[in-house]
Image 1 (tube, helix red, strand yellow):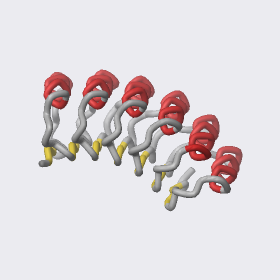
Image 2 (spheres, helix red, strand yellow; image 1 turned 135 degrees about the vertical axis):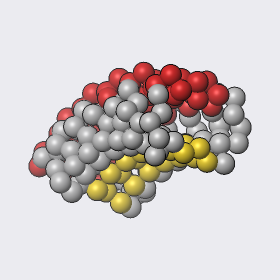
Image 3 (cartoon, rainbow, N blue to C red; image 1 turned 90 degrees about the vertical axis):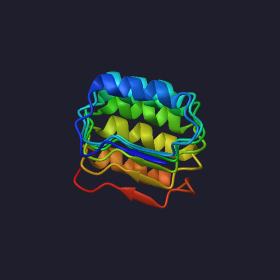
Length: 176
């Protein structure tokens, strides 16, 4: 079952209600909430739901305003969630703080295979944290970091990580 609000302007209050329902829902596998101006509060509510939901495999939150606070909450959820395989967080005003939190989650998460962080504000510090995570993560196959602020230093750290990571097959670094 899919639930798609992408073409609509979902209000923050509706996200809270939806997140509460996700805690008990056992059929929804894909949730598309792109372009709804969801703030960190909505990200936090969805993260709380992810901590207990065991059916959602894809969560699309692209083009919102999740920010670092929402990114940190989602990272906390990824530490315990074992069903989500794809997380789309492109264009969400996430910087190094959120990137570092997500990197820490990747060190222990064993279900996420695709993480999309393109078009955010992640610089070398976040890139280096994600590189450290790639050294121990054995499930991620795709990582999109395109359109961030990662320079040579962060790219070098990611290159070093690729020497030991044997699962990542796609790494996007364009427009940095």
